[in-house]
Image (cartoon, rainbow, N blue to C red; front, top):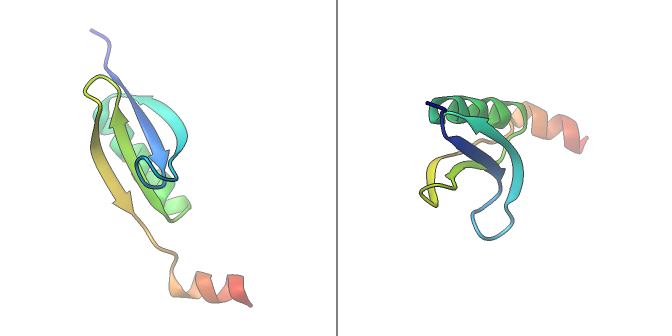
Amino acid sequence: MKESSFDIFSGRPGKDMVWIEAIQGLSNARERMEQIAAEKPGKYFVFSIASRAILAQTETFRKPEEAKAKSA
């Protein structure tokens, strides 16, 4: 049986969300969302088209050192 596909979005649901990619399997989607969030801080969520529900979400922030370096 084929695993379900889940969509990863950045931003806030229904507001400024941007589709990033689709991943097979919920655990794979959660793991990929965390990888993306570690690389580019922000808000992210995993959405299931089948159940029309958000199944996971995270928000990451830039480290203070990175914020200082970018503003200098």
